[in-house]
Image (cartoon, rainbow, N blue to C red):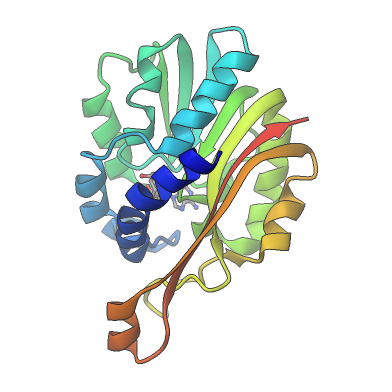
Amino acid sequence: MLNFNKKILILGFFLNFFLSEICALDRTASRENPWKNYYTETLKEPVDEFVSKAFELVQQETITPLVILNLGIGSGSNIQDILKQDVEVHAYDAVPESIEILNKRFRLYINNKLHLHQVFFEDLHSLPKADMIIAWRSLSFMEKDKFFNFWKNINISLKSSGIFVGTFFGKKHYLNRSPKRPQLFRMSSKEVTDLFKNFKILYLYKEIKYNKNLSKSRGVDSYSDIYKIIAKRI
Ligand SMILES: C[S@@+](CC[C@H](N)C(=O)[O-])C[C@H]1O[C@@H](n2cnc3c(N)ncnc32)[C@H](O)[C@@H]1O
């Protein structure tokens, strides 16, 4: 676990901070696609190491074909390797450009292995039964009062021994966003662990970093504060 964490600490921080700075969405602003640059940037990204680790774990636990949900998939880099395996992936994202990118990028897999859903999480009332759920840098952009209901659906969707891999913003996370947009959804470590009562937490990693440049430009200490988690459904 330590080696794994050290590796992701070095590789993950810079990109994570940069990406979270430019990521913001609310349901009315989506037409402007605030993620345009982000999608271009992440097209070149490898699979996140937490997601790779989670996929290894689910392969050990489950007989294929594996059903995988990717919530807030963006440009799809986290599924680029997974799609080569015996899987069925359901990808969800509110932004039409994300779906367009996936249609082009993974055209060979569309509708056989990869099923695309352009939808807001807030409008989803159920999810297919799944062996693995990826929610990487996405759930913290939800409307907070709708998140807990959606979390219930995630709990119902994940099969026993299924694996969840995702991130949540910590209380100190700062994100530049228009005052017209809803506040980001941040959580304390207790709030994060409380979510996982029906899970065994396998990895929980808190990444908090001081951002010198942002602190200087805002005149206030500013941080990137992110929980990364892999958990197994009981
Ligand atoms: C920061 S990006 C992360 C993309 C990808 N998971 C990654 O790590 O590269 C967040 C993604 O979640 C999607 N998203 C954010 N809030 C959403 C919501 N309420 N419903 C559906 N998708 C949402 C955005 O459209 C965007 O593609």
